[in-house]
Amino acid sequence: MALPTMTPEQRSEALAKAAAVRKARSEMIAEVKKGSLSLGELLKRADKEDLVKKTKVAAVIKALPGIGPVKAAKLMDEAEIPADRRIGGLGSRQRAALLEALKA
Image 1 (spheres, rainbow, N blue to C red):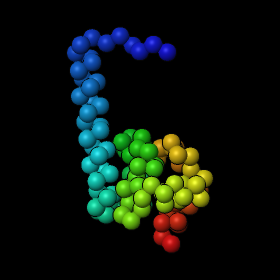
Image 2: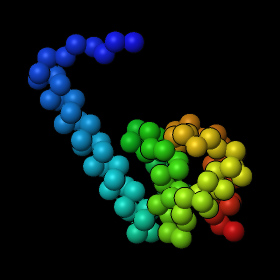
Image 3: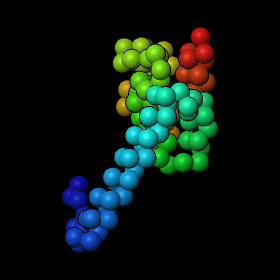
């Protein structure tokens, strides 16, 4: 699939939009790291916000305090969540399993 041809103005607008999305996503992950935003709150926001929907589950879980890459992979495996899944692609059972695993 070929990329669409863009004018220089369209390209600069797209780059600026992408940079803004990356910055907002990193700020959201930082809130999760600090503990000021819980996974439950984030999942509720996913119903309304595209930014949250398009964030990878693994990135959010790894950002949770006290959870590293190994424990995150184990949690995702137990909840039957593929490694590349985004929050918007989680089913209700996967969401519930993830929240339950993090409560224990």
